Length: 93
Length: 303
Image 1 (tube, chains in turn red, purple):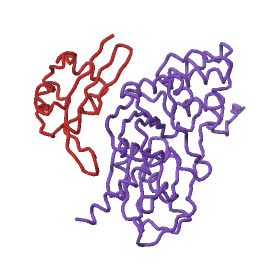
Image 2 (cartoon, chains in turn red, green; image 1 turned 60 degrees about the vertical axis):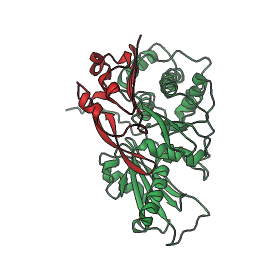
Image 3 (cartoon, chains in turn red, yellow; image 1 turned 90 degrees about the vertical axis):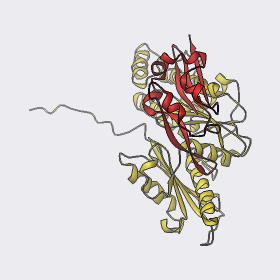
Image 4 (cartoon, helix red, strand yellow; image 1 turned 30 degrees about the vertical axis):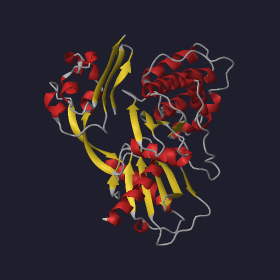
């Protein structure tokens, strides 16, 4: 799942791989902005609980996540994920 | 006392046709697994009924201010003249923007999963990229040969480039919504796209262009082009893999579809002939939901 957007100033996305995500919730505890949550999604006719970006933050991710320097891919959420399910795309123009 | 003379516009140009369809040649008995998918979108409500995982009937209506009512209306319409009753349906899945407000649903599933599944049903296993252009948002979905979602991206902030935006333009230019696609192609040369991404601002810009003497066709072309570019960007972001298909109401807009093909430099799979007993890409979400309903019902029977 891709969360975020691209606009005139660049591209800003947090990508969470719901196949890899175990739903452990470590990224949620490590996010300084409380932008992550657990959500139930429907995969292969099963309900699975995975991490996602909260609805509130999806539309302002550029500002919410800026302090973690997501362009380095060393943000706390990325580092805390043992399954390596979280990725950041950050390209300012 | 002179009453001001207000000329009332009786024709509502944005009003698209609601309709119901029953597929010929399908017989059902009480032993069959009958499932339904109800897709309550922001603009249209769609209900589809399947017999043993085969599309049987569907109804498309406009979503009113009341989601549960629109869901009921769509489902009642899909059932009309089929001899089926709501109680004959073994499993109902609700989906779409208003999915939590589908009162009769056994389960709610996101429209992303349902559209991928539905596109896989309509066009077959070669589908890898689905662009769903709904009333209020655009989604680019990557799927595998079984219709499972691999990757997904939704448009960001606003309604421009969506079905509702087209309705606004139909009203502004006084052109019936079904004609918009063809009219946008009746131009000598493709004008540059309108710059605004917001419907409200794009409308203002369009009025400015009309004042400048642009024809309706040219204004439509400029707006349609801007929408197609936005959609193409979204597809490029999730990565275009063939085959590409378009679902949702705007899949019927030839102006959009042909421009996306130009911008992407790739062809979409042709649309089924929905006017004559073909499957309708607008009900892809409801069809996918009904398929999930069948799978969930069978799973429940086993345990």
